[in-house]
Amino acid sequence: MKIGIYGGSFNPPHAGHLAAARAAIRALKLDKLVFVPAGDPPHKELAAGSPSPEKRLEMISIAADQLLLPDVTDVWDVEVERQGKSYTADTLAEAARRWPKDELWLLVGTDMFMTLPDWREPGRILKLARVCAFARRLSDDAAALKAQKKLLEKEFGATVKLIAIPDLVDISSTRLRENLSRGEHRGYLDPAVYGYILREKLYGTDADLTHLTMEELRCVSWSMVKARRLAHIRGTEETAARLALRWGADENVMRRAAILHDCTKYWTQEEHVALCDKYGEPLDDLERSAEKLLHSKSGAVMAKYVFGQEDVVVEAIRWHTTARANMSLEDKLLYLADYIEPNRDFPEVEELRALSFEDLDAAVAMGALLSIREMEERNRVVHHNTLDAYTYYRKEGRPWEENG
Image 1 (spheres, one colour):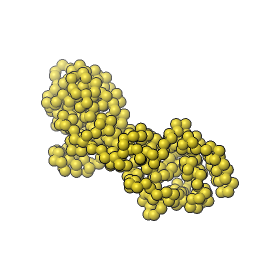
Image 2: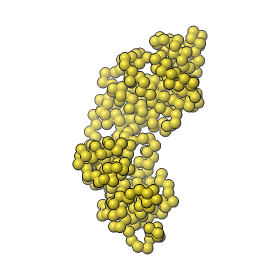
Image 3: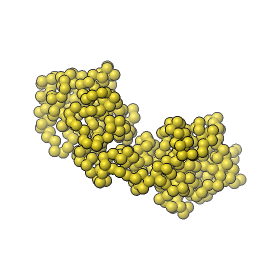
Image 4: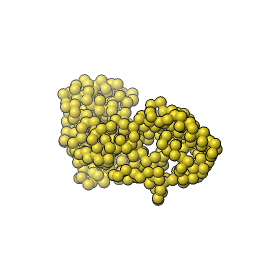
C-alpha cells in the first residue's frame, strides 16, 4: 500500500489542510492517508491559548471524517500520546514498524519542506519515507520548491514529488485563530469543526449554547455526529420545513427540532443512560437496552438542558423514533420528516411521502405499522408507544393495513 503521513499542529484544521489531503490522495494514488496531529511540535511553540493536544486530535478527527473517505483516511494519535517533543523521524520510524511492507510518503507544505534539512535526523527521515510537497499559499515560490527538491535528491538520495493543489485555499492558521473570536473567517472551517470550536469555546469564542443562531446550531449538532449522517439530518430538516408549511406549524421550530433530533446518535448505551439518569428522563426497560430508542430520549435532554430549546422542540425529539398516542402537531411532523426525508429508500416510502402531505394522522398510523412489521420480521420487541400510536391513529379500510 501507499500510505501518506500528514502531520501538523492542525491548530485548527481548516479547508487548506483538507484540500491538500484530497490533492495528495489523487496525485499519489494513496491507499491510506493518516493525519498525525503534533503533541508538542519541535519547530514552533504553539500559540498562547491553543487547545490541548487531545482537543486538536478531536478536531482533526472531525475534519478527516468530513472527507467521507472512511476506507482511506485515518487519524493517528502517536504524537499526542508521546511524551516530549514530537519529532518526525521518531514518528516515521514508528510508522515503518506499524506498516513494514508499505510505501510511506511524508506530506509537507512549503514552509516545512524548505526547512527539512534543518530538522532532527533529516537523513533518517528521507530514508524512511518519500516526500510529497505542495504550495500552501498563492505567494509560495515554485522555483524555490524545485531547487529544494534537487538539493534533497542530491544530498540525501531522497525521492521527492511536488504536487499542485487544484482547489488551493490561501489561509494561515494564525490569521484564522485571530479572527474566530470575532466570528470572522469561519468559512475556512468545515461546519462540523467550527461547531466543535463553539462547543468547547476554543480560540476565544464564547458561545452561549442556549442562544445559538440557526446556522450555529447546525454546526454544533453536526460536530456531534458522523459525516455520513449529515445527509439524513439535512434531509429531515428540509422535509420538516416543508411539512410545517403544509400543516401550519412554525418552520423555525421544526428546523431546530430536525437539526438536533439525531445529535446523540453515536453515543454509547452507557452515555445515553447516564445523561438521562442525570436529568431524570424516564426510561423503561426496553429503552435502557436499545440504543436505537435511547438517542431520542438523550437527544431530548440535550435539546432542553444544553441547547435551551422550548418544550415543543424537546417533545418532538423525544417521540421521533417510537411515536406515541395523542401526539402534538410538531411531534407528528418530525416523526414523519425523519421517516420520509429524500435519502430514505424502502418499498412504501413514496406512498408514505404522499400521505404525509394529504392526511397527517393516516401517515403516522402507516409509519407506526411499517415499524411494527419491521420489528416483527427481525424478531425484535416492538415498543408499546409505537403500538399505541398505531392503535390511536389507525382507520379501517386503508390498503397498506391489509394483512396488518
